[in-house]
Length: 264
Image (tube, rainbow, N blue to C red; front, side):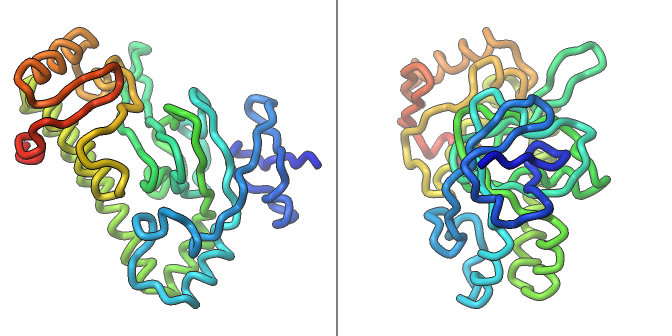
């Protein structure tokens, strides 16, 4: 069975909720078909403890399961939404990683964020009811799609979800402030050190890694995010390896001195 998406490429079809679980759908933007992921209820998800508040009751999860009823596979390089697209959904990254990008007036791209499994995506759209950046998959993965209007109603009924949404929104503000601090007041070495420390902290909080992890982004993408050149990022990582702070093997990073990273 082929199901056709609504206007936004990640929006679920409006007419028949059961069609959310069909194996194929078609993106109106690209005309390409994509595979829907096997639906997994929030109450049974492996990321339940990192995606959702800890104080939800079984009855709360039953209502949440009815809300988050759609998930889909994404492929590396796929644009999930673009700047100016109407905001309808929030997304929870179940697997994989996504970058957010804005195009500057001179045509250059500026990466504004990296989002990993267990983290939300699309919060930027709440302010003006449209997205403020492009979201592009860094690797193959899976997204859970959360209709925001229905989530708002649920938050009005479940205070724990309302507090959780507020924490997520506050986290976006904090990350934006940290990026401004990185770009405005830190030397190149300090920027890369802070970036690695922040990434390690997030991975640990989400139970993804302890001292070894794979960078889902390229050196050039890290440079775009930190306001640095590819060459500077590469030289800095090599210097960190010489200083026995990390061990670098391609995209694989092994942390040798976690205390120094966490102290950044």
